Image (cartoon, rainbow, N blue to C red):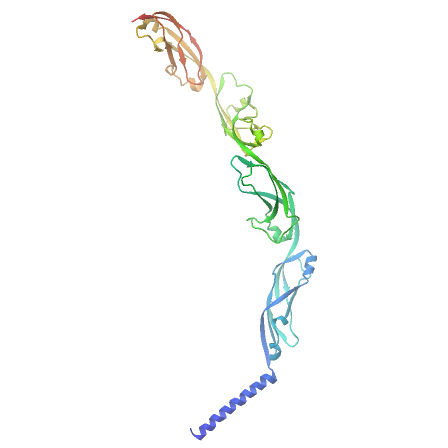
Length: 404
């Protein structure tokens, strides 16, 4: 390396050393301006007691942080920590609702505030309110088959709840839960009260005047019995009841075992039979014995009567129309006597009588154990249900049995 190049390198190294020395001097002795930012500086809430005196409470936010930038001499700024910065909001003098509250910031005297954010914090203040809430009883589980619950009794029937308006307004009901699985006797229990929203979730932060209630729930046996119609007054002449339709025909009742034991049916309250003529599904009330009630108190019972005019009809016959049975095979009836006429008069509803033919009535003459000679006999007449035999003229016959 030439001497000139070597001298040039030496000068450059010397200059660099001088620069480093000068920089160190400036940084340590001159102490230039310096800026630093502090994140997540905690904001203190002051005068919360003033809110309490107004019956207010902070709903949001529960805590707050801001960002603060400070500047000063480098050495002083470096000595500042986040805990040295005081950020506050004064909550005195505000009313219910959403309010922006200014943030006040203090820093050590050796530094100054360059900027901070946010400068306001949105607060939600709620009024503490009190309201009376009825206590609902809800059961958990199922009774054995043949048992039902009566109407619960709860003491006290309502409870005062207190808390922020927003939370109180979210309360759908105060409820007491009672377990009823496999119960066959009346239930007595002291259970805690819960306050819940529309979805059944607990509403927290609510205070209650008391935490428990006394519950009484009667337990009844059930029984299904038929319904019987009670009528008063009479149908017009020549009319009859063809059919009675009770809907439903049976009803489920409840009561204590002693009250149900003697009940085999439930009667309707007497109803004027003429009010049923031409009407369908007429509602009726039931006469329930003392201590007995309906499992479903809203169940309706209706009555429909099929009422028809009663008419008579006369049919003409001869003994040839009669079925002869049990005649001794060695005997015969005189042929002239088989042509002997007689008439039958019947009565029934017009719907049945009008559709009836004479062949629909069964006629039979039983000659069992009769010997040769003349005998007085009575024909047997068989008609369908709802048909009444009014008269048979003549009602008996003299017939002569002769050898074959």
